[in-house]
Every structure is written in structure tokens, then in C-alpha cells.
Length: 255
Image (cartoon, rainbow, N blue to C red; front, top):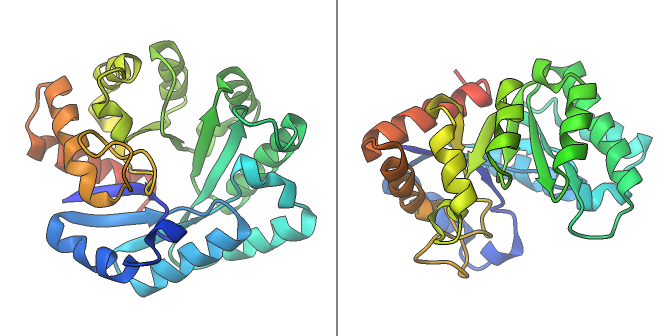
């Protein structure tokens, strides 16, 4: 079975066939899915999905690109969401410098505050970091994020940065990009990273692997990622599936 540790099935890209698609996952080898909160609204939607499907869990968090919506009152609301039984992490949170909005200082404030919240309630964090490697690492070190634990979602940096996050005992989230011909850097990271620190993810509906690159992504595409990871690691597909499934359960502290 495969564990999709990062999905967005609440996205409007799934409006036409969401229920049918989600119901088809177990029979296609997808054992568990964590649907990710990226705003207050999508956190609520993720919790609803987790309550509907026994093999779904949810996270509660505000993505850096959505942090302009945060204030003390909304952060308190987010914290209330984490009391829900099937919420297993705080995220996705972090820094995204690809876009100019919201202001980087706003992103930093709410990254720090959400890491503090995760520490208070003893949940791991799901970190989104895009074009912001140094600031992400510096802030995580300052927050002693290694004591909180979590995953660097959709890992996109090189081996040097991977080493830094692995030294903090973080997992690295790897998805469809691994299958791209031009993903030399990520393939090197996958080879370097111990298997017990890798989790599989789709970030669906985004980041579909080859041969479906550019199309809507779903958990059904994860076997392509498994095959490429098995090739890189010199292991069987079954070994990759088993190891990453256990890693996902350990990351999210599922029994």
C-alpha cells in the first residue's frame, strides 16, 4: 500500500468527480492520505474529508501565500481546528518567495507563530519552502524545529540543504518531480537521503509525474514515483512502498 502524505482533494479541480475518485483509491493500492490545510477554509474542508473517509486524515495550517488572512483571532480558530481527532499536523506553513505577496516579513511572522502553535499542541509541522532556503532553515533553527518534527514538503533544494534538514530529523517529501528528466538535483537528493527519511506525496492536483506531467495529478499517479525511487535506490517497488508507508505513519504519529 502507498501513503500519500500531502494532497489537496478539496481543490476545485476535483469538483466533478471527487467522491468517485477518492472511493477508488483503496482498490488501487492507496492506503492512507493526508489532506492538507492551506488556509482557514481549506483546513475546514480537509477536516470534513477526513471525517468522511476512514483512510483520510487532515492537517491544519495557513500556507505562506495565504498568511495575509491571519491575525490573533484567526490563529486561535486554527488552533481550535487542531483539536479535531483526525488532524495530525500543522501545515502547510513556511515561506514562499516566488511571489511578491504577501510581504516576506508577514510570511515570517506567521511561520514563526504557527511553529510555536505546533510546539504547544505537540503536532509535527508540514513546511512549504520555495526560493527561501536560507530564511526557512534559519527560522527553523531559531524555533528549534527539530524538537517539533515534521516534513519539508515538495523538497526542491540540493543535497547540502537536504543534509541540514535531515540533521534536524525532518522527513523529505518527494513526489512527481522525481520522474522529470531534468530533475537531476532531486534525484541526487533521493539517492543521498536515507530511505527511512523519505515520504511520498502528490501535492495533487499539482505536480503530476511523467508520463502525465501537466495533467491533473492524483494519488493514482504515485506508482510512477515509487518506480523511479526504487530505480534510484536499487530496491524493489514493494520495499519502497513498505518503507515509505511506515515513514508516513511515523511522521504523522499514526498507530
